[in-house]
Amino acid sequence: MRQLKELPWRDPLEVFAGLSDTPWTRLLLSTDGAADARWSIVAAEPARTLRVEAGRVEIDGEAVDANPFDLWAEIAAEREAKTAAGFPFLSGAVGFVGYEAAPFADAAAPSAPSPGPLPTMEIGFYDAALLFDHEERRIWLSARGDAPATERLLRSLQHGCGPSGRRPAEAFLDSDCSRANYVATVETFIAQVLDGDFFQANLTRMIRARFRTDVSPFDLFRAMVAADPAPHAAFLRSDRGAAASISPERFFRIEPMADGRRVSAEPVKGTAPRRRDGERDRASAAALLASEKDRAENAMIVDLLRNDLAKVCREGTIEVPEFCALRSYAGVHHLTSRVEGVLRAGVGAAETMRALFPCGSITGAPKIEAMRAIRAVEGRGRGIYTGAIGYADDGGGADFSVAIRTAEIAVDARTEALYGVGGGVTMLSDPQAEYDETEAKAATFLRALAALSAGRAA
Image 1 (tube, rainbow, N blue to C red):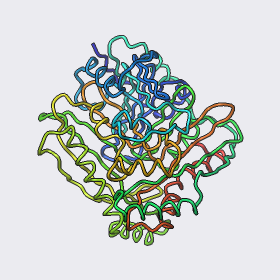
Image 2: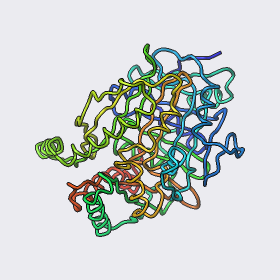
Image 3: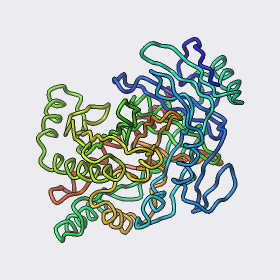
């Protein structure tokens, strides 16, 4: 039996603030007013948990010898339930899959230790959630049976919290890759492309922010959202840290339809900086739309995703209804495409994630060859960065973002955040321009840090 109860409107950031220090709490936040960014979700106290850390797979805290994607699919099958029309999520899985989960999806993928405190994968299966409809400014409490989390969610809705009011918090920055080293690596990648090793590889670097004073992970998240209200923002708390994401990129969405479950992926490849002057900003967007390099980069990943989707879709259903469309955000313009298909019978979010993971837009093509080249030069794992964040409803729908514009936050004596930035390298790449692209992608994170330093977290 399911409860579905309407409640008075509150801002989801305020409601979640009181939950933000508790492990296994989840906020999926839609903030930019786009047609597909209507709902936010708050979940707490999962009924079951799936976790992978340092190669150890756990179900409900107990180690098991199994592939986590298989376990996810089994639990999803046990929990399958009817959903209500008009709601994207009522109960189900919410969590993240880190980049280092790749060998569980494809044994040929290289492995590396994660650089941050979060586990490799952390999926909670939730019987209760708060659903925020931004378009109609309505909140719904969904509860499956007598979910213990119901009272906790109601208390958070009644009390909530505003901004923390902490004093200004100075951040100290460093990067694991200088401009000179990044440029030299891009040049190496270009040579490998010309040698035929791969067509494209996504090179990343990590920015590390250490805070002088007491800054909570949720303070940082609120500052990030204020700097760039992205359509796929998320805050996920774990026991030793948190993830704060303002991703502009959808990994995949599954929508139950009359003819089966339709899946769509929306790869982002191609970036240009925003300009303050309107005329210069329009020129930057126009140059991106006309860029041979960026359009070729996007086309390669569209082809890769077509091939990945073919593993789980009905034959003849895959199409590309949108190619290299311009989408603009606070700091950058992007080129985005959309690839769609109809999933085969019995295929759900876990099987789809396994077939597509990691997203080709953050690896390159061919995927495994690009990942091996990345592992050789980056010399460390990526953690949650370039993994996936989202939900899979018990009724069959799902929506996951690519975890870019994402900070992995350690909480110990003080807060420390890792924030990755990168871009795809092809034979047409300009090494200096590739580094400049990472600077443009880091700009909103740096604005968020500046706001924290000035005491303007939200």
